[in-house]
Each structure stands twice: as structure tokens, then as C-alpha cells.
Length: 228
Image (cartoon, rainbow, N blue to C red; front, side):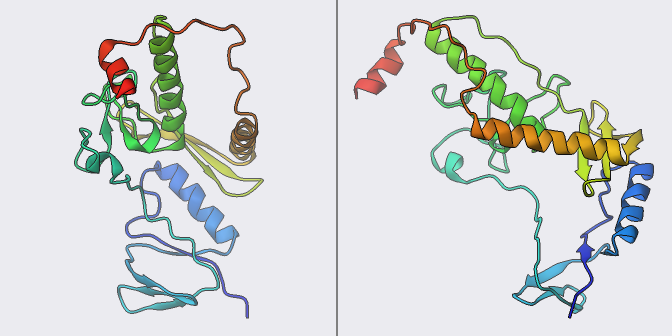
């Protein structure tokens, strides 16, 4: 027997979005036949059902659990300076402030963006912090000037299928702006981003500089650790 799809939200469904974007999302759920349960907690996920905090049991053939972000405890266990949630505190070049031989990017890094606020955990942040770390590592190895790349977060992007999506721009505080884009164009943009990401994964050396640079002499502290 086919089970109707449902989505469960602990609070309001995607409260990060603007009013218009949330309305678009709800219309998409209605169109796709997705039942929305808001302000509902989940107590347990079992093989064939989901148990809610109010004792409701939802039959399920497959459950996708998006429980939020978490940072590996490895950095804290290793003695690096971390935030309360375990993110590694880094400088502008993604270098650990306590262990300068360690670089952190993506969700594991507590990086301050160009707007003076911490970058949120997201694939967009991972791309910017990754590029900055590459610039820093190459600069330190070759003695070249380290360029500061962009560290920004400007939008939230949601795919609702091949023909629908939501592009929600945000302000410097990371709050949704009133205007948003919905429909086929955001869906095509999102599909293009995913294709580019897959292509880049299968071509990891594309765009790497062809010109070779001589390595700079290693500082005594680093050389000593290598020799040890």
C-alpha cells in the first residue's frame, strides 16, 4: 500500500524564509501531496514508522532524517581552540588560531565573513572557505602573498524538483529579504550548481596552476616538527 509523503518540522516549516517564499513552499507541498506537520517533535525513527512526541505514529517505508548540523569532536579532543559547539576558531586565512599548522574549512571552521558575522554552516560557506585555505596554503609553501578571497553568504537555495525551486536572498545579518524567486529559473540554477559540483568532484585537478613555484624555506618550528 502506498503511503502519502509527509514532512515533520520541530517549529515552523523553514522559518528562515520570507513570508512569500514560505507560501511558495507550502503550495509546492500541497501540489506534491506532502502533508506538513509543524511544531511536532520526533521521539524515535523505526524501520517502518516514525514516533512523534504526541504519541502519533506515522507509517513509513523510508525516512529522511535532517537533524541539523554537528561538528566532529576530533578537533576539541586534539587540543585545538574551538567554540562551544566544537568549531575550530580560525583567522582570515582559515588557519587555526591555536595551531597554525592546521587549516579548517566548511562546517568545522568558525570563520568570520566579510560582514563581520560568523559564516553559517552550508555548502556555500564551504566553497568560499575552501578557496581561502588553498590560497593560504599555497602562499605559505611558496612564499607568495596570500590573497583574501570572498567570504560571503548571500542566499538560501531550495530545490523542489526539476521544475520548481526557491532562491531566497539574505541580508548581512543572514535574515531573509522580503523578495524571493520561485519557479523554474531557481530550479535550473540549483540543478546547474549540483552539476558543477559533481563535475568538479570528478575533475579535482582542473584549474590548478600549470606554472611550478619553488617551495619557500620552512620555518624552524615547522622543520623541527617534521624532523621529529
